[in-house]
Image (cartoon, rainbow, N blue to C red; front, side, top):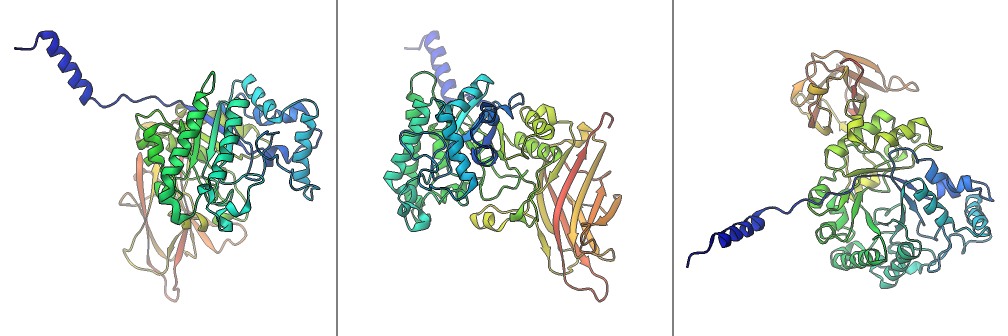
Length: 505
């Protein structure tokens, strides 16, 4: 018997539905700012704490594009609120010998003595200003923990069920008792901010345990009465780094147990416009899970050889933000800006909320430098490039991403700056951009720095004919020849691309 027309239509519809790719679930766009409760808050103000000071983490970002304040409720050795399930910070180190720690305790206590819970004060202020309030917890240690649990002390870290149970109780208290809008599971603070999650040799076998644990947290957070609690996780920038600590983030995304992930590395605070998080955005497609990469707070710091910490300018921050949007970020996350936050910082926080606001704004793409600790963990960088001796035609390639389509946006100027130590004007030093030599472009030379102007040269190319393209670019440098009686090599220390816009192109 032939199928009826209705049956044929049903069969066709079923086949089409089976063959069609799943519809993508839109991830929520957010602009997040993190306050660690310490450096620019509880460490700073003199007790008794005024309400104006207690509201500061919220008020300093209110009115910008920031719609989510993330508050670090602990740093692994005590909670910054009067918890009923965990130890309050400072309870085990009295009398205090550090003034900052004394302030933390007294500031919290001055609010408690007035019948105010320090965490509720912030949560309620955030909501009054229209912000979501997330509580962030470092996952591999807690106040009062048996020190033998720590991997650094020979323990097994989060492989200990007692550690996982304690942290679950803290997260449940935050989600259910305090009814925060979100909880952030910080797995990326190790090393530097907390002990490793697990022994490296146990990472593979621990991964399913950790996935089940994160799922348990998610079920708890979403089952609370009323609005479900957002579940966020900080993870490492590369998949290999995550797997090395037992984090099968792809499994988390497939199963939908996290609502958002933030790639970052605590031990390296340097802004990376080329952070390799594309694996996350690709894996998160169609899941509804958002990717909010971290815009780190420094352009350079001690870890990369700088004598001081240098905060990114608005132009530097724009470039990294533009790259993150271009690579599929669902929102942007930052922290530790120059404090107190001024006009420049608030402008940056306003621009981060909308990629259209920075499309035709001046940007400076500053390539990240290597740090020893990050490299050892598997998070490398192209700079510096050491060329040990002259070798004609031997090129050293540096890859970088540029979001601007300069052919259509028509900037006023495009400048490539390369800082090379031990270089002299008589050297034959070649630079190619995407295979094209820059020898014909206008170039200016200037001293590398004012303290030792003889030690390095800035090569500043005004790019007219050969300009960076939208997407991946390759800069190739080579030391082809040195003058007589000068041997040894040179080092490319810095590479920057300035794309300057104005009212007229």
